[in-house]
Image 1 (cartoon, each protein chain N blue to C red):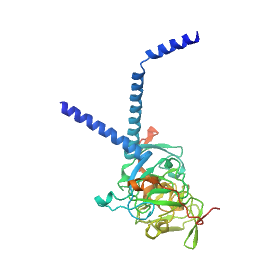
Image 2: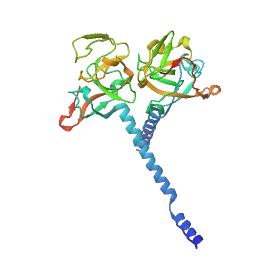
Image 3: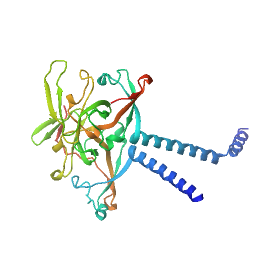
Image 4: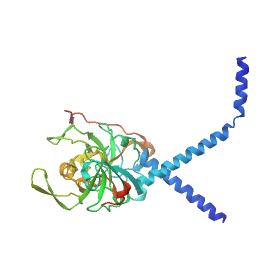
Length: 174
Length: 168
């Protein structure tokens, strides 16, 4: 009885077109892999979007979070200029990406307030070779080059150039 | 019409192949030649001209470590130079964040998110003794194997000289 049931199962399994199913599955996998590769290259070499939040870039970027478009071309070709908003890997925690404004390139001198909440004592520094000086727009609540010093250019991941969300404030930022 | 069609097909195939190659080399594994002699004797150097190019070591670099930035003492890593982002250096990780390291006669604490890197050939190596601790975010991969020339093929070992670092 049981043997008969198994043999009928085998007979039915033999009628299933395995090779065409495998072929189709392979095609699907290739298609997914192609899409992933395409997205990776566009994301890393051309343009991507990022959610930016936190108080450090007020009033340019809202505290609750804006979605911005980030282009990856200018950091690669050393086209970052003073005044650009950049995304960079935090020198204090490599897993964290922070958004700041570039205030000085290599060779520039930057003057900044040491502690804006307490007084007007200021400091002037020379940005060393291959580094940039980054600061948040909200100088009262931002952890930036004033604490950890100039950051190497290699940490810059991209330049934010356009706000995508919320839609009513769509437009270029910088 | 037929040649145009096949040309189009060839272009599409090569573009797909390039995209695939770039993705794998960015995210998983890549191969790179080593120049300069700062890592002697771990790697042999090559000159930049063509015949000498083939004499140096080719190494295999894995990028999985970049997903969590977890490294061990003695790993050989590649990183972007802090003073010129277009230059990639290969050095050995000596100390990790929060540790103390003896530099000549001073003790130095590695700040958060930074690391201390040095070449194996300390007499001709431009490393942390010159530019200080580097942010971990500059690291671009970990060297695992030498894959060329055939007589030098092998795993790159973790090596640590004892007595240089101290933990709190």
